[in-house]
Length: 129
Image 1 (cartoon, rainbow, N blue to C red):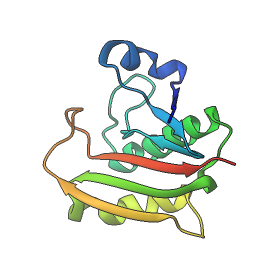
Image 2: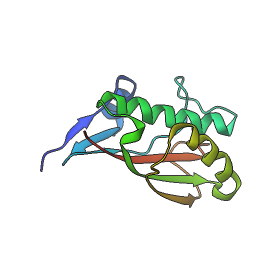
Image 3: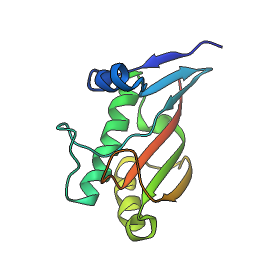
C-alpha cells in the first residue's frame, strides 16, 4: 500500500530535519500527525485558548493543502498536559471550529509533550472526498 506524504511550506523544516511528515494520504484517508498550538513564530502564546486556536487553525490549513475541510474529520485524538484543568477551555475553542455531526474523539491526559511548554497536541483522521 502506497502513501503520499503531505508537508506544507511551514512543515518542510521538521520534515527535512526530523523526518516528520505532517500528514499522509492512504486508502481514502488523510492521517495527520499531532499538531500543537504554536504560532507562526514557532512560539507558544501565553493564553491557553489562543494555543488551542492555533492548533485548530494549523489543522484547518493542513487539511486545506489536501483540498479538505474540518467537516471531513472523522476522528481525532487530543493529548493534554493538564487535562482536567483545561478541558472546558479546549472544548469551547474546539466548538469554534467543529460542528455537528461530531467526529469520534479520544482525549488523553499526559505528563508532557515533545514541544516544551505545550498543553495540547491534536491528531486527526479525515476522509478524502
